[in-house]
Length: 193
Image (cartoon, rainbow, N blue to C red; front, side):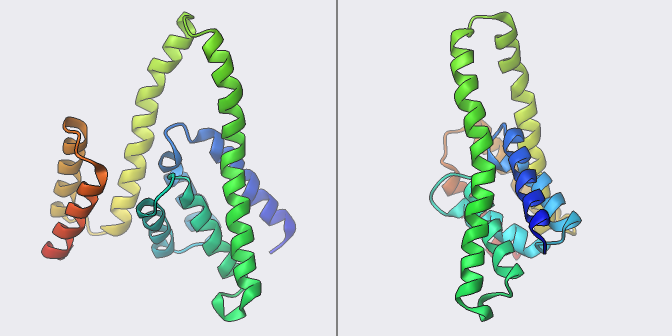
């Protein structure tokens, strides 16, 4: 794969960084479309496993980009069978994609934060903040739907019910998400989902 291809991949993640309004999970559907459907750099299973691994690991959600970068770099170099060269390629791609996914939004946040602080009482700023809530919620729901359908291609009603119940619990209680993830894994194992 050419240097131009890798540059385009990194530029796409720079663009995604600016769209990650609700965090890294908000851009999961677009990453899926680009990496799995368009470029076919990751399989469905590898993509879902990357998101899952990043979610259960301690740290920010953006780690999912590093895990995907690791998988892309490792696969492009021929896998673990190729030794240290493949491991280096995986690490380099993980660091590159993570930087591409963090740097633009960090710079934008820094400069916009300063500007918004100076203009916090302006009507347009208050309207912007109010308008972002439905956008972020929609992006988060689309990410959840994508991950749910990837792991549940037959649309098992029990799993949909469990997802809906989890969403209600998150919205109505203060139960930590890790407890819900543990409960979901337990119910999934017991019900054979």
